[in-house]
Image 1 (cartoon, rainbow, N blue to C red):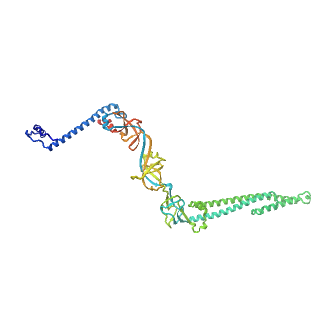
Image 2 (cartoon, one colour):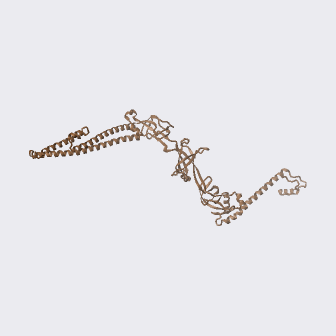
Image 3 (cartoon, rainbow, N blue to C red):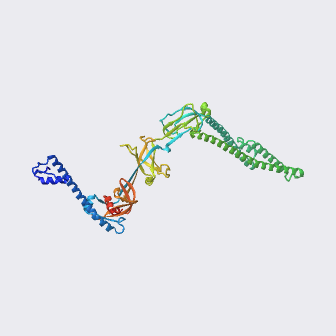
Length: 522
């Protein structure tokens, strides 16, 4: 606002004296102040008025807080800042400080932690394929990236050990066949011998016995038994002929005794021979049975050797090395599982052996997810045992997928201070690749947990506390024990009960007011 031209000369004189310290002569007819100087004086005046208004506002706030200082100390008693300490603020000061309280209720608590992870081959669906024998690679029947099934031939070797094993099987089969035929013949002879002995002991006529056993196998036993039987019958018949009452006087006593002795000797010899032949035949049957068992074991060992070399049981049973000719030394390297060939090291005419990996086959339809969980989150990881986690590549807009937790780790890595969480990933669409780095989201949701915003928690040293509103102007401190943090909220494990009103905004103002006296003293 411009200065009015009617300002008196005496007023200007006083102002100049105040500014210079020297009297100035001013005539009563001085000219008016120029417009530019008038505008500058107006701006200065407006600024002074604004400063004065701000001072009045700050003074009002200080007045509110100054009045509450005395009331806080008075209400606190012997522990003006400890647990339960009271703070009183005028309602206008509460509004001015932006202090806000909410009723505490149990709410679902969702704890989310993101940790680094990586995708790897499922080692239960992975096969490192080495040949069981040493040999020269004659054929390579598969290529890198090819899908194979169990039993598919990947390569063919020329191996002397395989040829020797097949020929050993031929010899074992021949020995078994011979032992089996011998055992059958021995069993038949033994059975026939026992039946012959029974017939002879029954005193059947010799003609009938010859008819019964004419076409049956008896070996040398037939001649021995029939000779002894005939001798027995002959001596007995001679003795019985002279041992009649009507001819006793016609034969000398010595001849009678000799005939009797011969008959008894023949009888004894016959019975002894029967017992001996029964024992011998049984012994021969046992020996043949043992030889059959040994031959059968030898054949089984030959088959087992081929099975250990990778041949299937059906292949071993159908092997005919004599018909194979020069191919008898061929050995097929087969895939034990269904999957994709992800590594190939087989080269034609190269020597290979059990210590050389020729192929690596993996079933990529299922992968492993390995996550490094920090030591502080071990409890969260253990709570996910048997559950699911989600993972993605961490890129913006990346697709996430679930994985079933298989193992939550029991050992902390001494270098990284992490445990390894293992999960199974369904990868039938092949969108995930082994070796990819991902971010794993560990989520634990509890249905009802007392919790407050992080900004509601105040601390003194290591003690956490919150302010509870008793009325519109009264608050008091409550020490609390905190738990998990997630999403800007923290679990309250002890100190609070459901239903009370906790200060969730402006708590720092109350803390400052509570400790103002102590800070002023320091």
